[in-house]
Image 1: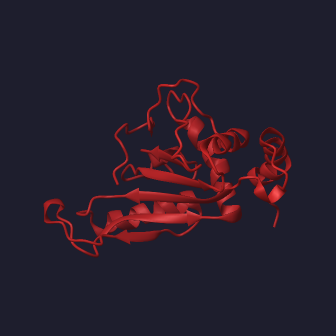
Image 2: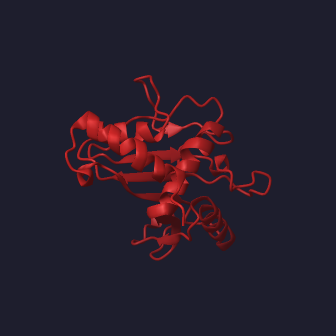
Length: 198
């Protein structure tokens, strides 16, 4: 199977640039993206049809079947019972991960209305989380057939030791960071500007 375009770009262009800029002596010490985790939450009172719908849409976007996450505790104020479905998640690695990132960076994000780039805030350990409030920006999803808007968190883990190296890794892969220092954690989307519900 042929390597994904983004993986090829990482091998042929990103690794040499990172080695040159940060003086990595060994190719195995050059940071890479290790996994991508997509989380989507929904109300504890959601019916079975909505739960199935969210799982199907995340499967279309990620190319992999998600796992339904369930409540570990019962919280009466939130009408939450232990074992009740509250979301779904999927972990991507290898070629599937690179395919998803390529679609996210080059197709989905540019489809956002008035897109001005994504926030460049990392978690302090070289990992990056992006909030998306409307899943219809992905080409796999038909906006006409959508019965509801789904929000999600996209968590991208890297082997970078610090945020500076991680940011350079993302920039070389084509992640469109905002140039302004005043950044918001939530990306504006075409239909729904509310934060991701988790």
